[in-house]
Length: 341
Image 1 (cartoon, rainbow, N blue to C red):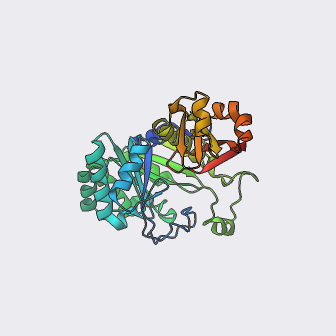
Image 2: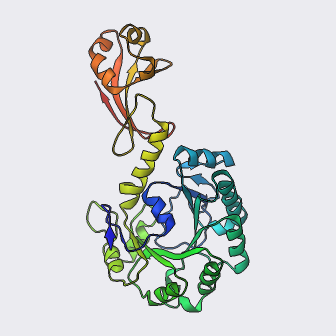
Image 3: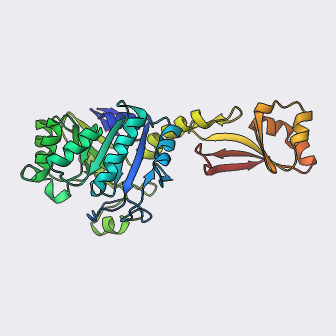
């Protein structure tokens, strides 16, 4: 098994996960409508059972929003999720075609579903350009999955040439039937570390789940449940992975595209620059600061942080306030830290 610094481990990574590790996968949330009400569902109240669309954290109102978001992070693929995406099948097919037409066949698209779609639906997804499908059967059906419609769906998807897998929370239960079925279709098993969220906290507590420790949201025993399995296409994704690797790598990709000449990109993918509040453009001109090292915005100037630091004393003498800003790299990104000079 290979592992990473987030606590994830694997002996196989489907293509969708490989791109996720690079921060190169855009997350397309096509609807919050689901109706399953799984006790472990972490979807926020802002999105749950609401028919809204997001590309990463960006609210989508038009097709161009999705394309712009993908371009902003130089996305090599997209993961379609929800809610239950297949409750909006037409929307899903439209977005698959939109992305493939814009970025080409190499733009890898995978989709999550808790349903067991029939052959016709799977064919329509494949024809639109879907590359990979991840099934999320209800927990109570896992022991006898061989006798459910999920067997038919996985088999049909495999026959049509889709990469297939089952992705579920890592909970102690009988997965022998799941593994047997996956072996038949050359499928992968993705296990996500169970974790507490704002929306599932009470239901997890009711079932006796507790956190690993006081600083973690991960559920005690979830990791161990995955470690006890023997399958040659297994991937355990830790609760820390999103922040420790996925989000960080995505920020780096965005930063490489969005950074100005004077922005410094940190190891976390955030941007650092100086902020001068007050009238200072004449001072900077007289001091010989190159035009490309700062940007004038109304009553403020954004500038290389080391230049702001060098001139902080003189700038404050002429009534300016000087700070060093660290912010997220996307357009109008949130300020992570502000340090007055």
